[in-house]
Image 1 (cartoon, chains in turn orange, green):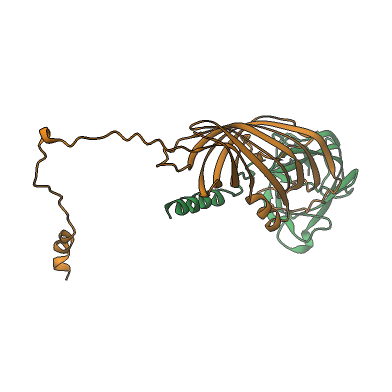
Image 2 (spheres, each protein chain N blue to C red):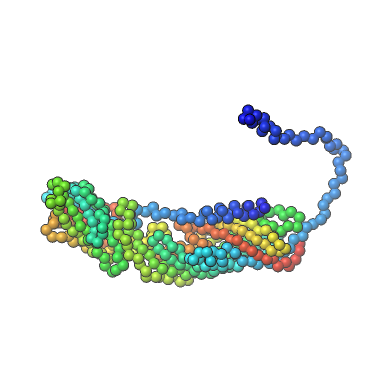
Length: 239
Length: 164
């Protein structure tokens, strides 16, 4: 059997040949396709469906988001998201809760060439984000451990909660995502974003660990986010 | 179909990326107390403590046992109070390993605490303020210097010198 292994492989080799040559002089008269496929323009409104699901699954998180976009050119959309998020960051040595509202404004550029009159998108986007929030340090344990002795002493838990109000964060965000029209004018979408924090007000004696809309703030002042959306297009015109 | 697989792939990428990425690499976060041991008669030279064991009062485990050191660094406790105290019991044995020749001394440290935020993964460090030392009289610790320090937040050099 193994002896013929290579020979068997050769069975699947396909060589494509065409034995007739088209005479250039007798080319068929091609008619130019004059049919123009029109697609809907209008305001698309939707919600993020991942956030209510996360709210029920994850006890430390509450959030919702509504979003909308408006098509201004064939492949250019003005887009915005507004929402509320509350998250408890349970770290090894601290426990804090951030909550507040946010807005993200920007544009989406559709990079996908639709076939016929389809209206799907693979887009790249930019957002400017702004968030106004409060952060409460619920409790913390000072870190008195070290590599040689581990936790030789178990430090007391400090339960004096401190709330910093009216904190704000500004950031820039690059997005990539897709939207597919499943039913007439109903879209489902998915996107991921990379966020770069421009400024954030830090609570006194602590650090903003989570900003609503921005998500977890990493040490490098960057963050990641994602959206699963369901949206409905209210068509204004067909172009 | 292709759309769904693409979507699933993206879901996978995103969900697998949600991990704790920053680890605390600072060691230690809170400064430990560094003690150097010097010869009582010749106060310029470091002197090893033989068969040295040390344990904090109220703890069941020793920091170390039966070691030979002339410099040690020991942690201080954080208590949720204005003023905290850590008391260490130090045992040495200069002659042989027999229990009868063990020499015991206590060294206590009284201080105020102040917490300072370091980072998400490291948490808060403790700065020890107005640190005062005392030792049991008539023990193998004959003297020590200094008796107080204002601020203990640095690991670069020894905080106390103990003569024995």
